[in-house]
Image 1 (tube, rainbow, N blue to C red):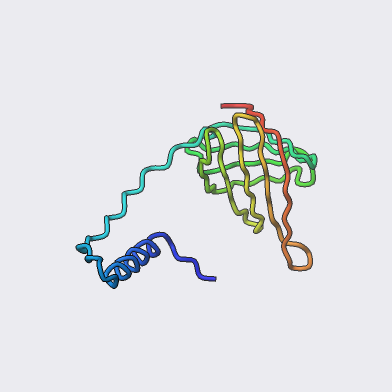
Image 2: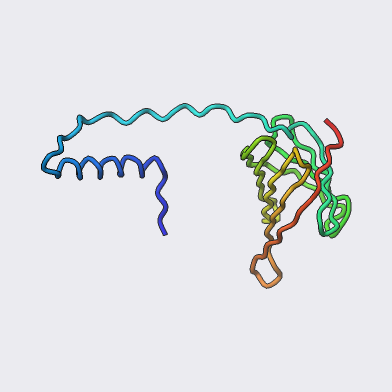
Length: 153
């Protein structure tokens, strides 16, 4: 399956529309226009969780302490309880605001584990999905829910 980006798909669709119109007996060809220059990317807004520390309590008994950098691009985490107790890491984050106080946050750990959060700061909840390698060389994923408690600012 090949996926075209919007940048290449839109000009191709416009060209197809012009060719269709030009071939119609009563249509007149529109003057060619230069494609608009891509907009300069605006700096990403700093997420509301940036600069804060939270305790996440997951439905499987794991408890994590997550501290986010002031710009929201880095996470320092420590597993306080559960199967990963005592482990910690620093992760580079990909973040997207998807609503007011609602964020999609994703990272890939050095171990290859991927973690995705949908953080709802208003409700104090997190939907968590992670994937990791299995002993047989495959991968598996788990979906969890967590409560989110801010413990410092």
